[in-house]
Length: 109
Image (tube, rainbow, N blue to C red):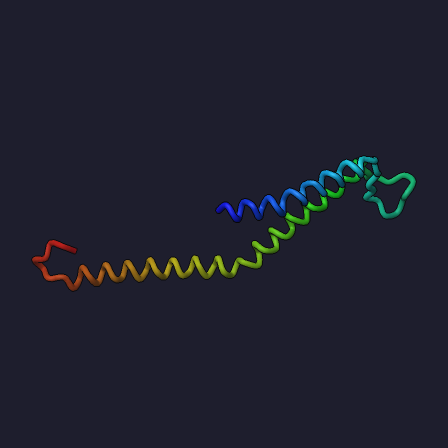
């Protein structure tokens, strides 16, 4: 556990320093336009610091990656659910057969 914690700090701390330095160095405001036809008077535009745009991109990229992985692993979740159902059926069948094959006077199931 300690080695993992040291590894996380050794990787995470430099990344955090770089991210903070990026945010401090890119404080200027930019206009993000959602109108591809009019540059002078866009119908939808947002003013924000450059670092906010960067972090929004990273955030939406993480969400998109998580969703893609979740959908890609759907077949494995379905297979696990079916295997669990089959196991429960087999256990129920075993219990039923055990009850049917037990001698009539046997009190232990």
